[in-house]
Length: 346
Image 1 (cartoon, rainbow, N blue to C red):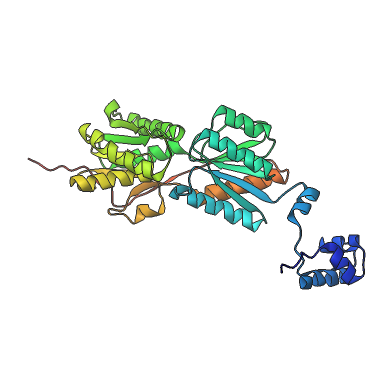
Image 2: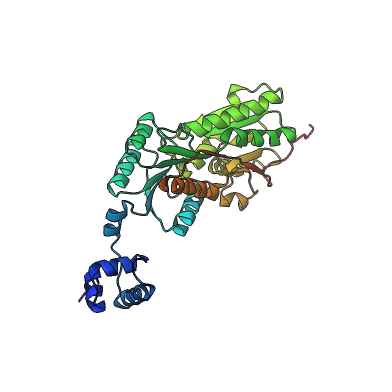
C-alpha cells in the first residue's frame, strides 16, 4: 500500500507546534529561533516530507521551470546547446522542459501555448524560423523569451536573442580557402534554414568581393528542404555536389557540417579525393567533424556557450535585471579536408 505524503500538518502535530511555525521553519525564517528551525527541519527529513511544488509556485508565482523549444533532438548542434542550457539551469535550481517543433511554425506555436499552460517562468527558442506572428505571440504572453541563434528584434523587453555571427563565420571560411589559392569556390546551403543561409551567403560573397573575385551564380546552390534535420542536410550535400562540380569549383563552403558530410560521402562514391581534388569546409564544428576521414575543416560555433548565455540572460530577466542581446564570434578550425587546389599538368 502506498504511504500518504507527509504534510505540514503532520509535522506540526509531531512537533507540537502550529502550522505557521512549521512553515516558517521550513523556509528558514528568522522569526523562528535557530534551535526550533533545526529541530523541525530534522523532523521533516526523518518523516520524509517533500515540499509541494504546486503550492510553492502559487505562493512565489514562479515554478522554477524553463521551456526550451528545439527543432529536433537528433540535431548534433542542438544537443550541445541543450547541454549548456541545462548546466546553468540546474546550478540555479531550475528544471528544463524540452519540446521539439520539427521546423513547423504551427507546431512551434502549439509548444509555446503548452509551455504557457504549464506556467513556465521563461521560454528559450532554438529554432531556425521565426515568423512575425510567432514573435508577436511571444511578446503578448508577457513571458520572458530568449531566441537562440536566430536574431530577432527585441519587443517590449520580452524577447531577446543570443546568436553566433553567421556573416563573419562565412567570411572566415572563404578567406581560408582564398589563402589556399582557390579561385572557384562554391557555396552549398539548404532552404530549410533561410535566415542563417542568407547571412552566410552574404559573408561568402563579401569575402569574394574583397578578393576581387567575380563569383558566378552557378557557384551558389541551395537545395530545397521541407524539414531542418540532419538526414535532409546529408542528402542535400549529396545532391549538391554534382551541380557544383559541373560549375567547375575547386572548393565548397557548406552552410553546416551535416551538408559537408553529405558532400564527403558523395565524393567517396565518385572516387574524388578530398582535399587533393576538392576542398570542403563546413560550419558548426559538431563532434563528428573531427572523426570523419578526412577530418573536416569547419567554422566552430560555441554551442554550449550559446545555451549557457541564453539561460543566464533568462535568469537576469526573471530576477528583474536588464537583459541584453549577445552576438558571439565564431572561429576557424583547420583540419584535413582543405588544401591548395590541384595543379597537376597534362
